Image (cartoon, rainbow, N blue to C red; front, side, top):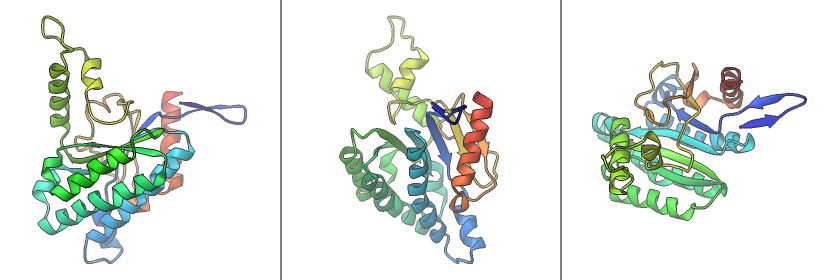
Length: 233
């Protein structure tokens, strides 16, 4: 996306992905005994992110909420709290935005029935809005690609030799209408992407912020956009 400034052109990403890491560390540094307070602040902060994107004309956002691996390895108490955020806080803030359509990518069978049902309900109630936000919940990047290939094959898009084009797989991945991610923002200073949408982000610019996710502010977001503009301009 290109937006006109005062005599200049600023190149903007069409689709931004966010790996919102550092919630537990933020809670410890803030003096909270329970890491859940960091997760709560992190989930609430998603509303700020969506507002920044909307005001800058960025219409597609993908957010790493909870991986399938973390569901299996973190404590049951922490995971149950994350399930609650996934079922109540995140769908609610997308719903009340009035702008964003919710999409979910991941294995909802890993979630409790009520959490999965609430996410599915919110997908339906927000459908047709101009913005698109995809939440990766119960997500595994390799499984995502396999599922996309399987859906493409079931849809009968393969040629007579059984071949598939990359665009066929892309079209059958979950999420909004624009699958390819232009810019990935990773907070907390870590240099790993943790299997974040590997197919969709194959050609993305990556911006690593040293800030923990609850401390990542609008100025930091604009810094990431400026890095993207420099690389893509």
